[in-house]
Image (tube, rainbow, N blue to C red; front, side, top):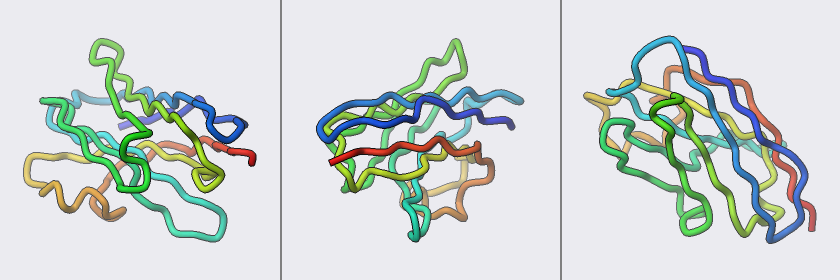
Length: 127
């Protein structure tokens, strides 16, 4: 599995960005696709995930209502639309994938539940 993230950048508070993650290497029908983020000096944390097969979505409380995860199935691409950005959203954002058939949704927030990672893309929100 190869995951290529892009779309990070510098944005002002209240602004928007859309991250993309191009996935390749296999069929993702039975996979969860997700986004994590890691701020300087902090642990990597869960942001959002989607079950590729039926489109079910999951969000961290900190981003719920502001971030939207979606997919373009034809292009094997996962997006993270980020609106109403805050300085505390500043982080390196990582896309991730993991087989989902036997994974409980409650485990999605755990870094160790994810098997494949892309390189990060930096999002900086200025105050």
